Image: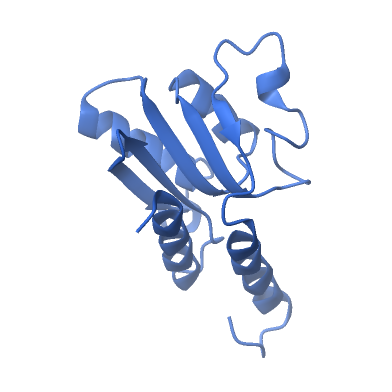
Length: 151
């Protein structure tokens, strides 16, 4: 299973819990260090986005406050909060699936890593498994609007 396939599995698990289906995986040297899906509802915590949870788990697993040499694979373009955390964690590469024109902060919106005040910008690779990631979100939100349809 590729890291993005694992992130998609985490996103599907999040959807099954009633969370917005976003999943994230931190890897180093091809090995999964941490994986998570959104937990904002389960934890009553608006900061418990998949990226933040995965970064926290990876820092704990490695016993480090920075994830130098690590890569993050996430199903949705990170928001400003998560993009900032990715920068502060010194993530080496960011791979993401679907763009988020409304809430994204990497290739959309504020484009945090293009700002002169950004101290660390990861290499960014958008569009990884984009269709699968976008479909998960579309089906999830369609189910919220139309409770009769299958999720």
